Length: 479
Image (cartoon, rainbow, N blue to C red):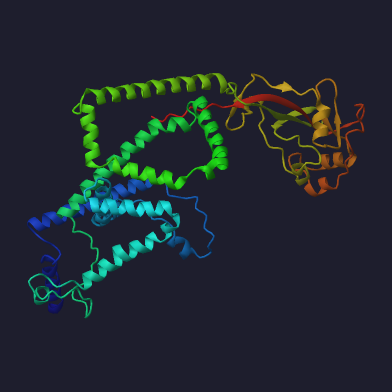
């Protein structure tokens, strides 16, 4: 008993002592805040999981479930998104360095590099086959040689080799570690710099996206059908023109002149010259000439636009009325045991004696009331009422329906022909569930027999109703 009490007291003392993971003071408060934030993140993820549907619709042709799960994208998670963003931002410096290199080339920050780029571009334009050699040249000159020289550096200044004038020598073992790309530390100066540049890039993308949506999308989304139809017609004509005349255009010199013009107009002297010309620092005559040229260009643009608008208004003819089609519904009635006809259903098919549903013993599908018949999806009614099809013989012949009797006058019913075996079957079984196997063995005759209307009628009769529908106009709101 004493040992047991001592063990209990020792366990209580052990529980009373703070665990190594528990911290007090400032660190404990930070740990509590971090734990609370993680709980909030998990709660928000649970709520977003209920709102955001899972990505489905992907067809997997593999039978192994593990392989399918390996290629399935993970679900949305705030912690995963935050973690991936920090990793991407820490490694995005390579992309920004490439952007700086391109800007330095086109802004003439280092004229020798820009001229070298133009020389390479000229050779590629004059001999397009060199474009396949260019990646290998870049690999050797921009990646492999600098990497080798980093491992085998030249002797620094002030050493014995440099004073004796000994040239660079690659002999010997590597003297320096290899150059590698490491991600920057979080919350460092480079990390914040990458975040600022990434923020500016996102803003630039949003501005460019909105500009395209505002200026280009109205030309192609048929919001103005006449204008988009004109663009379509011009594109089709351009396709045929380019197919027949593309080989006559000196594309090498076109790309050569265009590339040189684009790079040269970004030269600081060219930019300054244009600015001085606009400001009138070069005299009044050049300014007047530029204003006259600009006015003539603006006037020519307005004339071309007015001509195009007039041509579109006069020559582009659009269908103003929506597309219309005729839909049908069949009114089915069934003969009761007393010989009276009972309204049964409005069915999209005539449910003739040799139809698949009839042979299988299935009940006709549809609606019980005329008012419940809806227009097809994407269509709406063009007429207020249904019209009875008075040409019953025609739709029977078009469907090659047999074993029926057609009324060519009156209410235009199309009756099943009377068959004694079928009548015995109907009276000996439940009305709603006829014997399918017995129904398959019932003999049928063609509808020409009994056309005079004197013969006994079968179990079902139907007639066809028609109504016009038109395409439903849906106006999308992009605001």
